[in-house]
Amino acid sequence: MDKEMLIAQKNEVEEKGFLDLDIDPSLDLFAEIERLKKEKNAIILAHLYQEPDIQDIADYIGDSLGLAQKAAQTDADMIVFAGVHFMAETAKILNPTKKVVIPDFKAGCSLSESCPPPLFKKFREQHPDHIVISYINCSAGIKALTDVICTSSNAKAIVESFPRDQKIIFAPDKNLGAWINKETGRDMLLWNGACMVHEIFSLEKITRLQVRHPNAKLISHPECEDPILRISDFVGSTTQLLAYTKQTPHKEFIVATEAGILHQMMKQAPDKTFIPAPPDNSCACNDCPHMKRNTLEKVYLCMQYEQPEILMDEALRLQAKKSLDRMLEISEQAGLI
Ligand code: SF4
Image (cartoon, rainbow, N blue to C red; front, side):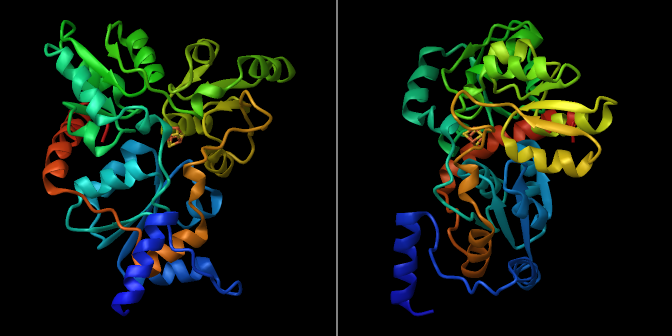
């Protein structure tokens, strides 16, 4: 490819977040993506909130913990991360020598953005006797200011690995932090961040659904607000919610997390009924607009042209990696890996 074309592509990725190229509509994208996987020794890691087509073409589908572990273990040359930016960045932190591409560079995260590193640095400096535990949904800048990262799957184990009298700052999700405080009897200092998807579930509409479906179990992600968690029958990470719906004898569920997870729930338990919990707006279900920026077309284009690529400053990467390594160590000791 000539230099001019490369510059044009780089500019387009910067402006739009992806290469906006026409794709022949007769192309079998599933077959093309499989071909590119072999040709480039690439692996597709997809979050459970991705659209069904992307989940179906992925080599591994999981939540943040599972995806971070897979990213740390893979021997592929290229990681295609179908998720949001902080997740692809995490894969790059753990795999500096591998090429990490993301279908849409502008797939961000409201939760991650609610915790800007310069502000958080000041907050941390105001509490020098506290250690910092941060939820993985944060930028590399926050990871670099953190002692241990956690996910919603391992947060309790990570917090409980510290003595009860250890003062802890928990960032960036105040709802997950409050839930962990309740579960562990701790009093962690919480950063005031939240996820735009999980904080808009409507208590009123969910209650109405429960009246109409008296046998349905309400299952929720701990990023939801406390009033939703209080009336939930089961609270867990996306992987834990998935496992629960498969293993429990119950047949009907109201699911209070991003609606993308219903695809795997229906695949793994086709005889059961899943009702997406409604948000406090005119939509019937709750999609993350950041996760849903990724499409099958963008997956194909990012594999074909190997961009948008995640690149990182090495000093920042090394500092951020310490908190991730600590999480993987503690998770291993706690038997979570
Ligand atoms: S669902 Fe919430 S936490 Fe997850 S990527 Fe979207 S905005 Fe971020």
